[in-house]
Image (cartoon, rainbow, N blue to C red; front, side):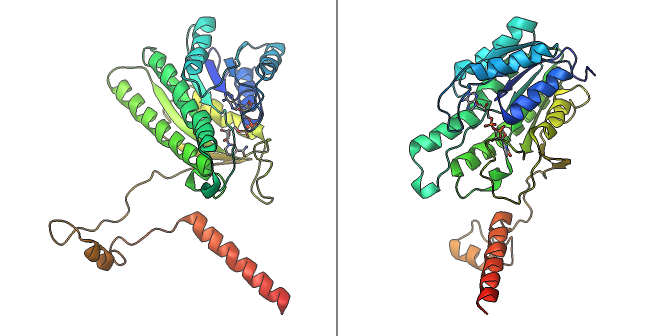
Length: 309
Ligand SMILES: NC(=O)c1ccc[n+]([C@@H]2O[C@H](COP(=O)([O-])OP(=O)(O)OC[C@H]3O[C@@H](n4cnc5c(N)ncnc54)[C@H](O)[C@@H]3O)[C@@H](O)[C@H]2O)c1
């Protein structure tokens, strides 16, 4: 063991499969004790089993590490508490949380049921809140602080068939940035160092099976080292960032900001004044996914025309 995370106690949701499992095994191989938090469900959230979390715990123990399973549903507030308590009760601290658990209920927005919306927001967004909330209450009192790693997706920008997932992933970014800001303010008041960042992964797992052929794709094991770095002491100064991780590539996202401003000619804008001033004033910003869609439609039309001629 190289021990990059030696002595750290880390809880990982969704650690039973895919990316979460790869993060759990890698962090354990770097010396961390792991809470393997996984409900053991299918992709739509059905058929829970504790066998999935237990199997990863067994794998970590066989390799000489230490781990404990929590086979609860992260969308339940109390399960967030159980996950943090598992680390405290077994090893006396919680030094990092990684929220990887996720489900999918794909549907176009105009057909989406309330249940499909709620189920995805509950596991992804509320699942992050439930663990962050309980962990931060402990970490703020620890001299050694702690780390949060949220899992978002490039789909936070938009998704035609997964508006629920897209909205949850956008919420996770805002929640994580709020955690980062809270952490900074606690540190300024003498608290231990706490950081909070997001990873937007792309990796071959059961969840990405239906992603269209041709998209840049790596393995779940490619994501794990970045999570471990953000959980480590050398990575503790990194705060409020979003990183895409895919294969050999790590990219940082820009921080959103206002880019242009225009001021009302009178006390307050009228709609008519905005209509006249906006195009040459603040204008608009192109949505990259809509631009991409327009480009692909134009390519398809050109191909069809060529085929017909
Ligand atoms: N795979 C990708 O390319 C990709 C792309 C973008 C974002 N992501 C995100 O990365 C994360 C991991 O994805 P993955 O591809 O490894 O998925 P996966 O389906 O392989 O694993 C998800 C795990 O979460 C667990 N889980 C689901 N609901 C749960 C609940 N209510 N409580 C506790 N555990 C629960 C499942 O049992 C499963 O083990 C997800 O948040 C996903 O949105 C993945």
